[in-house]
Image (cartoon, rainbow, N blue to C red; front, side, top):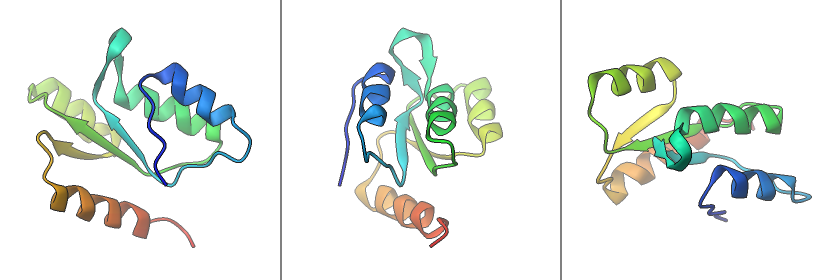
Length: 99
């Protein structure tokens, strides 16, 4: 099941929904409102109260941004993302979850 949101505020609204849970967060690196996907992922994990695997998607190739993404520890894929790469990344991230 996929939950799609267009903003951090919408993600927080969905999170407030009773019974809402996420197995993986797929977040664009560059978001409206000068937010980074890394910031949003950390905030969402804090609200959830437990770590959730994160996949950051970016078209940004600036060295500072790539270093920030690398330091975050989150898996990173570059746009355009090929379906097979996305599938592999999701399989890897979900296999890391405790059963």
